[in-house]
Amino acid sequence: MTAQLELVSRKKTYTVDEFMAMTDRGKRYELVEGELVEMSGPSFQHGKIILKIGAKLQYFLEKNLVGEAASGSTFELNPKNGPVPDVAFVRTENIPADIDPTKAFPGAPDLAIEVMSPSDKWSQVIAKVHRYQAAGVKIIWVIDPFDQNVFVYYQNNRKKVLGLDDELDGEDLLPGFKLAIKDLFE
Picture 1 (cartoon, rainbow, N blue to C red):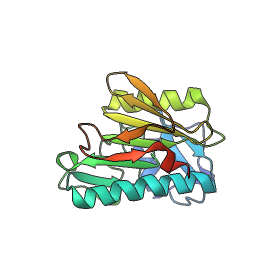
Picture 2: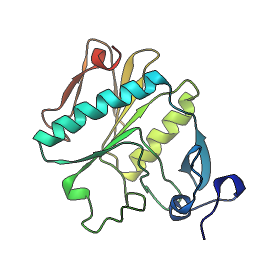
Picture 3: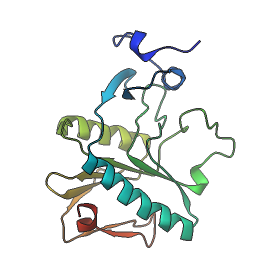
Picture 4: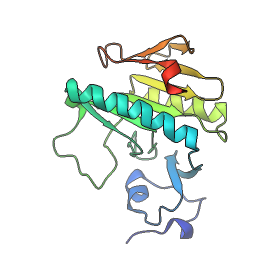
């Protein structure tokens, strides 16, 4: 039996499997600690940034067969957390051979990319980064289109801030991947 999002109680907690079985996805949601959290619709700028970074990453992966990228996919960090990163990357060796295409990805991505929206609060962004880190995400890129910065968070709690004169680097995760920060905001 599938649940309609409009008919479910926001006070009830859900598992990722229940979340994935829901229909009526007219609104965008993530599952955070078992609760449905509505995501705002992406702005034009938000969409452009996702497309730019996704296209650059996809082009890189076609030349360097090290894994797969996805946009707008649910990842099951644990039974009560199913974030939907704007763009994600999973190394080939971390993709199960028997993955079910109708369900959330069973585990964390290696790289999660989040583009901030006007409605995002930094406290919520940092909480999401911490959930990613706890689940084993190696690198998280938080792109701030308002101040034109990229915050790079690592699983070991290190972080750095990149500005317009810097470039994103795939480091050990995506050796050879480079993207100038200024290119994201043009």
